[in-house]
Image 1 (spheres, rainbow, N blue to C red):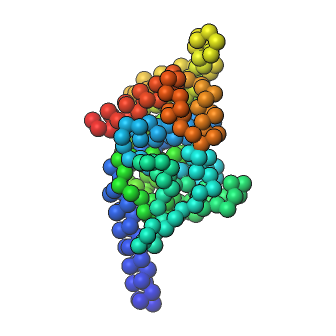
Image 2 (tube, rainbow, N blue to C red):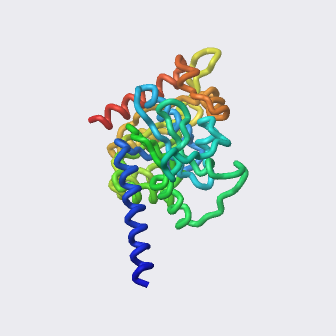
Image 3 (cartoon, helix red, strand yellow):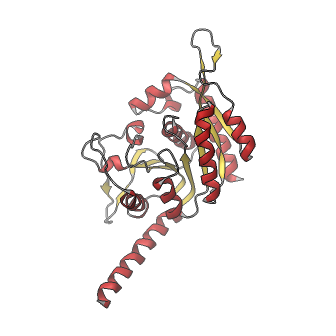
Length: 279
């Protein structure tokens, strides 16, 4: 019995050592969260990751949305599987392009239609393995894309990593969306994770014919939340059909639409993230 317990304790120590070694190779950890679904959180996470790579950084993106992973499709890596590194028994994250790496539960599924029917402990265990048993390279940034809300997945990330640098809150402009976004701000504060700022997504539509900006979703919720909680608004990304197309086809929006107003706004957001983190 003592020998069994000794082996179990030794295995736990080795797992914790691997976890800490992986985390120590990542300079900055940012978690992208939203209070509700449908606000474009994954779209923001992917484009922020691409934007940081364009700035010369080495970036990883970790999809901890276990039930509805979308990062694989948006990065154009659907169907790709993890490969074990030479002279190691652990796999590496998928290399999307130079200096961009990704890990998602989708890389472990036989079919994208396969549902994940798990309760909380299994999800927490999977997220821990994503950080512990994946041989992450040295990274400047790890962008963590979590599912909506303040449940198991974002909580697991914060508890496992322990020193998440900051959170990025994503919301649409209408007041209803901000009811939930305000909860994510409070979640960050309770978890001692600094809020880097709010990103307003789908904040208006620029007419391709007349160039006039139309506010499709009315509301001053983002401004009110920023004032009430003393957090910054990092930017307002307009609704752009090309962003949607890029995500559906797995192509980089920033690379293919550099002159678009929304591309300029995303680049400005990335610059603010960079400045705040470095400060």
